[in-house]
Each structure stands twice: as C-alpha cells, then as structure tokens.
Length: 307
Ligand code: FAD
Image (cartoon, rainbow, N blue to C red; front, side, top):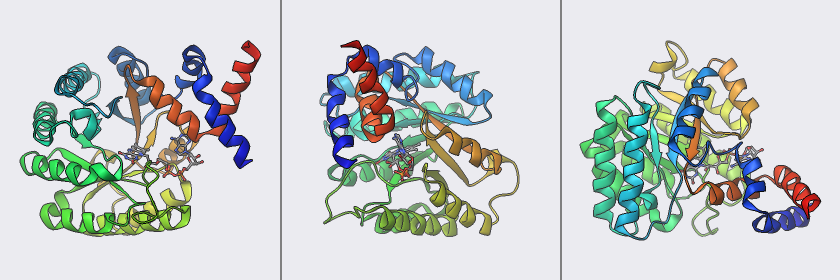
C-alpha cells in the first residue's frame, strides 16, 4: 500500500490544473479575495469562526513581499462588516523573511496595526526548521509592539519546549500560540519522526501553555489528541462561559476532516476553519492531495479516464 500511495503521489504533477481544481475546491476558497470572503460567510453560517490565509511562500524579492502584504491589507478591508473577529494568518517567507528580516518585521507590524483598528488578530506561522530562529526573532520583536499577534509552535521539533518556555518568560499569559504537529518533515537530529512521540510532545506543550494561562489554538485533526487537549482545557476551568471569551479554540483546515470540526462544535468547543485563497492555490492543493492518497486516487482515476 505504501508503494502504491507513493506512486499516486508522484503522479499528481502530471494531472492537468483543471482537474486538480475540481478537487482543490474542497481545500481552497478560490484564487480571489471575493471567493475567500464568500467562503468565510459560509463558514460562519455553519457556526464556525474563520481564519483567512493568503496562499504564498518563499518570496525572494522586496516587491513580492510588499505585494503579499498589500493583499493581506485588502483582505482585512474586505472582512469589515462581514466578520467581526476573523483573524489573518501569514507565512514568514511570504512576508519576505528570507529577503530581509527587517522588511518582514515592518510588514508584519503594519499588518498588526491595521488588524488592531478592527479588533482583529494576526497569526505569524512557522515554516521549515532553517527559518525558525529568524521567524521567532521577528515575532518577538513585533509582539513587543502589538498585543494582537500570535505565533505557531511545531510539536515535532525538539526545540519547541524551550521556545515556549522562553516566550512564556517574556510574554506570560499574553502569549498566543497556535500549536501544530508540524507539516515539514524534519531530520531525526532535530525532530521526532514517529506519530506517537509527536502527539506526546503536542500534549505536553499544550499542558504547559494551558497551565501558564496563555491563549492556545489547538490546530489538529487528530481526534484522540483533540480530546486529550480538551481535557486539559476542561481541567483548567476553561470550558465555561461564552465561546468568544475562551482561552482556547480548535482550528482545522478547510476541507480536511469536516466531521471532526462538527464533532468538536457539538461538544461545545470554539472551532475555527482556516480558509486559504490566492493565485498560489495549485501548489497548496498539490500538497493537500499528496497528504491524502484517498482523494489523490480519485483524481488519478478521473485523469486516466480522460486520457
Ligand atoms: P494527523 O495525525 O497528521 O492527521 C489526523 C487526520 O487528519 C489523519 O486522518 C490525516 O490523514 C488527516 N489530515 C491531516 N492533515 C491533512 C491534510 N492537510 N490533508 C488531508 N488530510 C489531512 N504546520 C506548520 O508546520 N506550520 C503552520 O503554521 C501550520 N499551520 C496550520 C494551521 C492550521 C489551522 C492547521 C489545522 C494546521 C496547520 N499546520 C501547520 C499543519 C499541521 O502542522 C499538521 O501538519 C496538520 O494539521 C496534520 O496534523 P494533525 O494534527 O491534523 O494530525
């Protein structure tokens, strides 16, 4: 099965964009902001919160980073009157981290300022290990100026417990972390590579954050882990009162495990759906398909029928 899945994954780049799009619609709102805003409204109609992400990463020039930031400002403007609390989420290398750290910090800071005027939050994501030191430097600097920015911590990395300890020592309960397992497959010298130690690390980091009173976004589709983390929130007395005032929430990717989102919602937890959009939808969708051999198999069958 492993070999067949690997072959299916490897065949995905041969499939035409039009066919990929038929499936990608599940994971991506569209290429334009208008499509993203329509999806945010649909997500709200289902009783979930939303998060907007402009697709893109690995920008290698100033103009590209500034263009990405402009799109985020348009997204913030577009959300006015539509969704009072939808945050935006941005990747460091989309905002020019590897072009110039200073530029990235300025663009993130301006984004936080614009978001703050509408009472919104900004999430600074984490990418592969070589970018993390610089990303955390930018985050810590901008968080020192703007309270409405949070970061992402990847449970698979050995360093994450120390990173959280340091961030808590600086920002205390004002720290806002989205906890993820980590999408980047890092080498065994710096990261756990097997599912169980990654889950154990996730749970341990969640416990540290909850006990410190930090805000925690539990971004996982793993229902066993979600239940274990919900228990931490319950034990801390966090599961009472209005959803909007909770210190924790669950976050899931659009189109991934919708039943899990509904289950968490039915259990009374705040749930937010990550809504990505943008011209880079093709690369993002290919990554989602390569993660999910079931759907990739359908795409490949349809492709072979066309041929
Ligand atoms: P898993 O055990 O990997 O998955 C549980 C179940 O969900 C499995 O059945 C699995 O097949 C299915 N599943 C999970 N993810 C997908 C997918 N993408 N496509 C199809 N099926 C899937 N990672 C980072 O490194 N940096 C970030 O900034 C970041 N931001 C994120 C934001 C959100 C809102 C979410 C939900 C995830 C984010 N991630 C980020 C990705 C995260 O690190 C994991 O790779 C991803 O969520 C899968 O781990 P899991 O906890 O869901 O558990």
